[in-house]
Length: 452
Image (tube, rainbow, N blue to C red; front, top):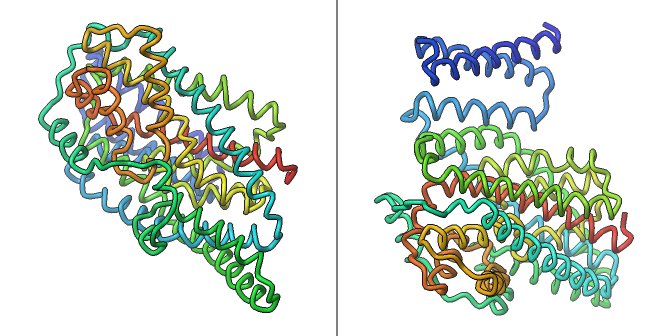
């Protein structure tokens, strides 16, 4: 069957499935549930046949997202155990990150021996990160003040949210932003997946190798790291074959455990967040791309897979290896810049997360019936500018920062617990924007360094 006919079949069956679902939900026509479900699955199967002929990983990921969404909605008990698929994928990804960053950075620094560029590149990246994340904070503030999503909200944390909040708060520990950048034990940093510490170790190792006088020994280590880099990219390609199943499992589990009922009280907050994220992309990232001469079509093609993976798994780490590979192969960005900017950005350039934190903090204040003054909101942003840095490796970091911020403002943290009901949906959006922002940052720094 021709691709066009298969695509047409998928569109028709999908449209009929959506129409039948709406008719049934709105009680316009009484239809058997099995009929509606059958049409939706027929649409997914038709899309699967089209995807099989196209042989595109991005399309496979989108297909499994739809299948996971449908499975989680139709048969939640079947869908819940599928979380193991995304857990397996995340574990495999974590085995890639340390050797990939190490090998790419060492080759980039020692292979070219331009040590001044390392410091210059680092300074430019940090300034860029600070400016963009600060803009993201204020966009979050503007959005929540404009919509007033928390005003009049009767937020009460359910038992599940209180229990989850308790578990997250139990693992809260003192966080020294400066000290936590430097590794005390590289094996420990790798085991705990402390990406920033791995970056620092790799940079110092690369500088030391570049300073080595013995050319023969230097070449041996360079050959090893170059080979390791190539092997890890091939390793990434192998693991990515499992990505569609992992994405489907993650979406199926989220829908099965969360359901759609939790959206009722917090839907306005969710819409405000996604609206603000879109404004940030269109009003900040797109103009930055335009000013730096970003080839938008190639860029979108390069980030489509990693952003989709990040959205489905709500994990920036899951997208990191594929983002590094695509930016090098499809955008022509040098590996040394990618290996420095992307991992560092995951600690210092969390655009989506910082936007969410300012927005959610004011939302909690509004839900408590307190209107923060402009001075208080600016003070809160200054606090968030510091506390949101360098915590990418901490589980539940966004929630811990949110609770700490609202507590410092004298607000009831129990209101923040209630947000956990839709945290998975919000995490998908903010993580996707984090990945987009960091990929763009790699291009911007490469352009500033005249490397592309």
